[in-house]
Length: 303
Ligand SMILES: [Ca+2]
Ligand SMILES: [Ca+2]
Ligand SMILES: [Ca+2]
Ligand SMILES: [Ca+2]
Image (cartoon, rainbow, N blue to C red; front, top):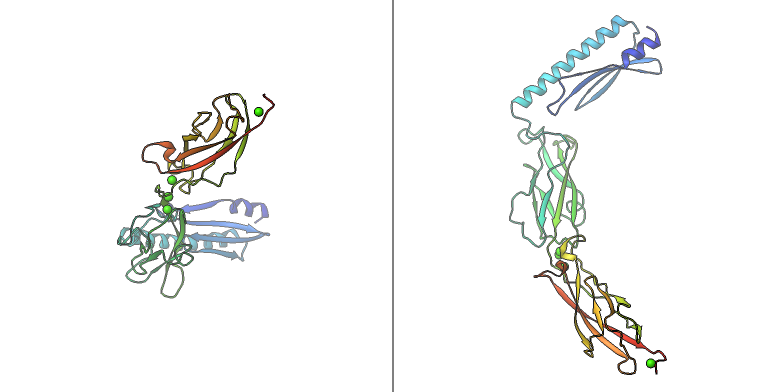
């Protein structure tokens, strides 16, 4: 057989009984002018060298391997129809688990469940790995080694950790993995449990007789709740001005500007504005905080 012929045969691949969460494949491969027969299924992969280059020998080997694979597939089909397979293996990712922060789920027996296709009786044990399991914070999530039920041992704080990504492991008693790990992702949903916080604000300056609309300062409070969530969307309002000359205004975003163009340092050289900030973008029920903005009026030669 010529090298060209071998390459042509090796370029084909015969898949049999694919789908349903399992597949077997049989292929010929040429590597550095040597010919190999490759058997592959979900559980193993075999690359067998073909020592004979004759087409009849190669066909016999290919036929033998095909018979083995058919028998393996029949075994898988029998197992699937007998109900032994508990979970489809596609994706190897469990559905996302949503837990509200501050809510007590510790009495819930199962927030998720790891299952193995190869679980029969007590032949498989389950484990959890990753932050929240066998890494800090340790044992926030624990798994029942026998049935794969995952439960929690604490009340969660989104502002501490908002997402946990763990691996569910299925092992045989001899310590070998029964199959590939499955991903378990838990998201902690936000609750509006943080007040806005005003930063320390230094006094700011503005010239007397500045025109209406002159920028004075932008107030920037913070809120530890989830970014992009209304729980941390802030809106500002002016509670009072001292003295109450109504010289300044503040917009929703916290920008303080001159409202009245008759600022006169010789009449009043300093104003204290009491500003309120509210989360939920200022809607009813939002949490609030107040701060004071001190504004010094600077002199011009206006007399
Ligand atoms: Ca919190
Ligand atoms: Ca908040
Ligand atoms: Ca929160
Ligand atoms: Ca002046």
